[in-house]
Picture 1 (cartoon, rainbow, N blue to C red):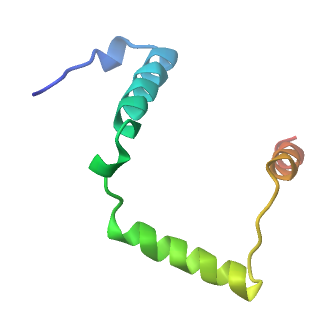
Picture 2 (picture 1 turned 45 degrees about the vertical axis):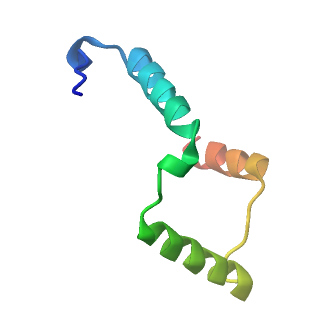
Length: 72
């Protein structure tokens, strides 16, 4: 099946709405969508950085504040 959307004439809001609908549909049964192998490699590397103290988790509000200060 081939679906064609009038992307050139769609607004950004319309495109985002279509993307959200696609993600909702794909997420209904996540077993049908497999992550590529490199995702596991990236996650393992990040876990190792957390375990070694080289990296840390940041609170979402802290990140928002930092980004707002950086962009101001």
